[in-house]
Amino acid sequence: MLGEWMSRDKPIRGVCMNSVGCLIFCFFVAVPSLAMIERFILVVSASAPISLRSWLTFAVQLGYLLALLVIGGQLFTRIQSLRFRLGGWTVMTVLLLLLMAFLVVYPAADSGRLGFYSDRDEAIDVAVRQLVVGDHPYRCKAVSGVHDGCPDSGNPIAPLPGALILSAPFVLTWGGSAIQSFFWLAVFYFASRRYTADAHLASLHLLLLMALSPVLIAEILTGGDLIANTLAVTSLVLLALGARTFVPWLVFGLLLGVALSWRAHFLLIAVPLVAYHLRRGEIEKLLTIGLAAAVSFLAVTVPLWYADPGAFSPLLVQRRFDEFSHLLPHGNVVVVILAALLGAVLGRRAQTNRELLVACGMTLILPFLIAVTLNSISLGRPTFLFFGWYAMSSLFLGTLGAFMMAADRADRAPHHA
Image (tube, rainbow, N blue to C red):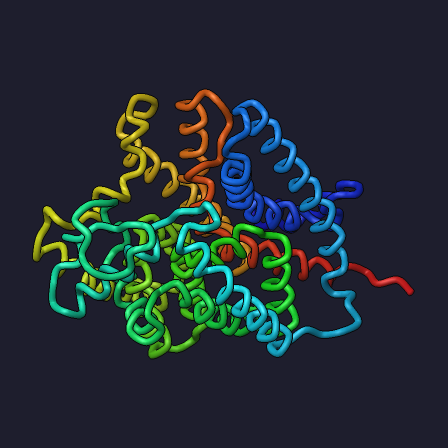
């Protein structure tokens, strides 16, 4: 059974010593961070020969993996043995320091002075402003550094309408959506603290992620919306799963549906959630949350699609596997089926709520692992760009489940004087 395998100790001398939960934690952290390292090396060594860049990337990635496994393993063995307790004040202090760094780094990154270019927060900012004045947001394009107006050239706007609704308060008050990651980090901390019923565990998990996951910090400081999207979905899943009565199920289900209308691949988490609750016979909870999420997802998504189906760019932009049709025909359909099958098996075999979180994380990360593989084959060399960065979608669900398992094993382990 999945639960038996995931709860069993797997001693590995010197690396992730206490359980397989540590390896799962490091796996979810490593994949998107390897992509970030590759992107960083590509930017800072743009003038170097390709062969030198490749060897440098490999060396830094290998060093990071070894450090992650060793440091992660050492920290995991001490999860419950810390003499001091962490809480909300510690997390808020770290977030405040990170916010100060954001206020310095983001303007430089947004201007392109750091050599990094992205149009993800720009796409949301432009779309929200168009929606507010009553124009169709998807008739505009996204251009790096352009946050208003309606550019007629650039990349299609990719986020679904739910992203515009959830981002609108930040665009209209602060002037842009990039800062919303801090709000969602606070919401996630509250949700994980409530879900685990352990402020120390929730604090340690978030701080450990910040220390070991450079892609998380990079995404926050550059204003990318993927981290906000991931945190919003993860937080609402945790709040919905942790609720015990009809009204919270309904409220969190409705909010979850809006958050799912951001990037379509997050819909895959429905599969392990359904499989898990069906096996446990929790039909009322499943139907309430599921129907509420479905109704709100359709309510915020369909009107803009119906208003102009031809301009609704998310349907085309989020079909990432079309570019690998020469390697995997009907790739979008095949990958969805494979991820759904994995989610159904893992969700049904999950014995505890922490194993369910890992099942959700595995379901979300599979499409990006396949994309990384296909992209590497297509380019003729190993690469985590561009798809590895999007594996961040599974970061918080997968690592929190693994963290809870490791902490549980530490609690049940015999203590020696």
